[in-house]
Length: 469
Image 1 (cartoon, rainbow, N blue to C red):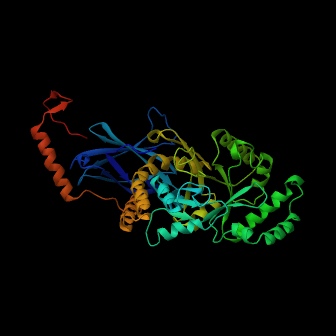
Image 2: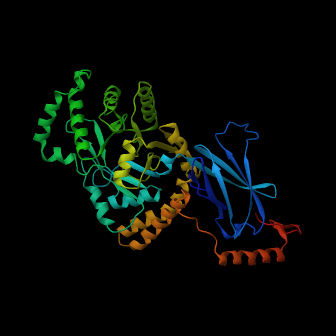
Image 3: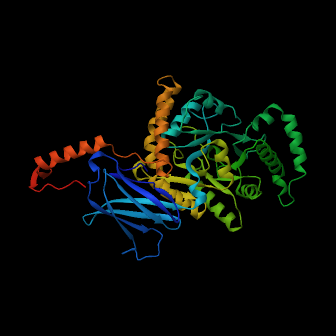
């Protein structure tokens, strides 16, 4: 959901729980500088508080505006969302939302990304480097290029943007198709290719699989033994490469015929412990996606614990149902391939599907309640704001890849986006109005008051000049 213009912002918007935080309310446009020396009231209420919703309890803080801003301190309580009303002359003039998180989450960075994508180097429609720009334009922080049986196309992206400080991270990856079976595996984060091992040494692959046939659990029906052994080989090789294995699109129907993996085998493989994550929402039509969610719920009831991710499985970027509507929000130590891999492995992520028009988009997030609640706050109040900034960077990345602009433009766009993120999470001081801005606004407010009158449309209805806030 793209953001509506807002007159004012509050910094930071994510704070540590049960600690006092210094808060600033600043204007987003010159006309909304707060009035010097005037008193405002800040009312703070816990969204998840046990209150009468007709009259929820709130804490009130009186603040006097100085230099166009308000500054106050407040000790937010336990982890949850807080609603803040800014009151002037007994009227609520703005509403803000702040989220308090525990120390463990506060030290992590929320990142939006896609872990299953394809380019023109396999069966996709977009150039690898251009695809990176398309993802950044949609507000993504990372994506994994997982071309079919190809690990190396991601290297094109690295070479094109070598030496350029882009805001999006290319996660190492490939989609592994073990020979003679239809079960696919998405490999991310590994330092070498698994596909190339069976493509260049088929005989060695067959021998290793034959040895693994002896290790297939007796509980696995004999009809699945070969496929199970080959997935054992794939996942072991992925882990040897330092990567993680994701089970993708469980209800995918190639050419709209039969599932590539039936639900019985899918459950056996997902519950086997061989996979690190389950692509809960991915490259499937909505009815099949619904089956994926239902199967996951059944397995959870049986005690399954596995990370879930959302991915587009994108092949083209136009008129597709999955892009940019299925994605993952990962809570990582930093925006690097290794850190994102580690976050997914540790279940510090949620799978997201979105629907609706761009300005009215709704999101469904799946994972633990704690992460889903936090992610929903970010999906409403953080990621849409950043997408506006990422649009320019994504376009500049594609232009740079074709020699149409300079690296400096890409880096300036990325720097602006990164600075916003740091301010949002309290890791950088917000930008404050300058003395020149304040003088400018004071001058034009005086003109407004002097020359009046107040009008509504074309009709003069009052001789009293009122302030605009």
